[in-house]
Length: 633
Image (cartoon, rainbow, N blue to C red; front, side):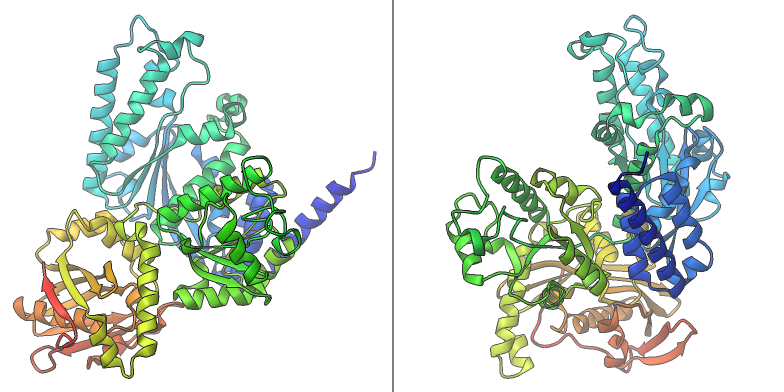
């Protein structure tokens, strides 16, 4: 029997993607190689694909692509090493070279509780504690008995154990830790009566998961992975492989391996500040069905009945992203007046014109519109997710702007939301007040830029802004935002050191460190916390380790006010000089002349381009610009 044309087409496309990936790796074209890896993992995920990506991308391939090392410690009750190929491949598709520390089989308790174990010998970027429910609490699973299980004692013992383990872990490591919650049993021993019984397995497992969340909230950088929800989403029958469970002590299917590796990578991206900031949307056959220029306002599909209801649901989910801080923009080939009519008159539109911070409706190429949007919002193209239903437009953007994340929508609109959320491109570890207000903040920025255009000189513009800058100690209230800034700020960031909440919390009570969160208000509103300073007193020097500023306020001399604050801090602490470093990256060009512009002297530069700068505070004191009002909390 001959192969079907569809199978032949799939095999041909897989071969083309493999060839493209290998070629891009060999030539060192990082962004195109990452795009090829993503397409391979999306359409041809398998153990064979994971091994292929790993084979090409390890060794010289990793060097060619400049993959960033990311160390993961895997602790598990089962043979979790079987996930390494899939997780390495996912790392490549996100610009990372994942390196593993693997504990012995089912040795997670010993590794965590023993301060001299291999787990604590070298730093790592993330620890993953993956334990199946039957291995944590067999009394709630295989050994469950309504007559003998004491729920109260079981829950108290679990709470004590997990608190003791996390306490020991945090005493020996500042690394983030990600812990699986417990999946519900495949079969309840009480059958259909379980859910109606307050002592049933389902209720018990749910309460244990609540305890896990409660305990993790008491420790910095301890996160809970929704394992039960993930298993449910994929389907328990597809998730587990009973043969592999008994044969290799690995209970997961190949479907589960791919899904779990993707879920782990969501946390890796968030920890590194690789979450995307901006969602750019097409309009026709994306936000509504049909083409408004051809079908007219009454002819597009949007409303209470299918397929219009699927587009309404998609818009509702986009609005949910917007409410947690994702910037929305439009890139559409269309007539502006037709689009304006839809937003003004179509009663089923969930998204409103005011929800979009940039609106590119013109007949030029989508790639050009994306460049204009990035420039208008002052964000990098790597922070953009572009969503379109047209395969040709998606391929055009992938080739022209390979740093942009592209989501090609499926053919059926009811599948749009799944396509948008599947990979978690907008996931963050926390949501700050600034995130929730981001759309308003960009509106304030637009008003300020309009004022700049009408000002006759820069000093007049600064004075007209009526800016107030406030320096606050980093504390429990603003710790989450401080960590978020180190993870997400790229342009005005002199060293681009990423820090977790645990890293910063460790410095908050260390008298050697000066930590300040920087807030700015202007005549258009409160910009929130937009800057962070972390400097350490060493002998008679105050060494600046972190100095960063949000792109929303670049060009307003806030950095000068921050350096003036550091000069005062150095003086009050008996330091005679400020010491700063500039570590050049692909994105931090706006920050590279910071110290030179403010009178620092260059002392050295190494082979990687990192330069060291010094300012003698006794003779070269920096003053806060006179157009600022200044407060210390």
